Image (cartoon, rainbow, N blue to C red):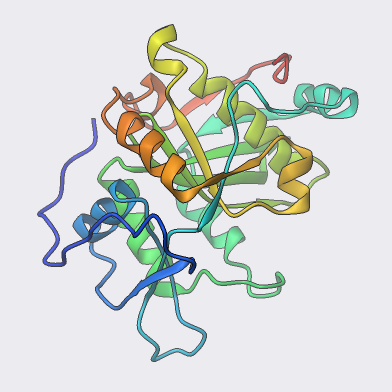
Length: 241
């Protein structure tokens, strides 16, 4: 089970539901308690555009979420799920490192972000869903799990469809458990992109997101994120949803 860190020295409040700006705060730090308090209030951090800029805290006016029953899996993606091995938390820092590749367009994951989420992972709050092929890490995603919330941060692929297969696997894992809890779990992707929209991601107003978050964060943690680390799972036929 995750270890609750010391509370943050900073105070977070629920963003103004009528606000028109995604950016809702600046400053604070990346201590584990600060990050968890932020996610519990619907915020997430990104570094400023310049090295010495303060941290930026966002709560999108229109939030991207993936309804667990809304994932779109094409025939080709369904076939691709058979070509990969899914592992959970076997190489979290390598997943973050590949997501942080500076050659990627619009890269934002700097060293302080990497270190902060590595510490969250050590405490049991941040997790990676990985796609492996012939013993090589070729894709994956990482995010933060708090109760029934999984807040996705970034994904990467070095093989065709590898990141999509990781997303399919994540949805499959979040669909496991008691039906009354599964229906209230929340898969947050921050902002919608055309690529994510093609997979079923939709936008909801900030007010609706915060209402869903208030329910999801108090649910029990999905088993896979509260059990033994380094779990490897070969799951043929992912994408049946």
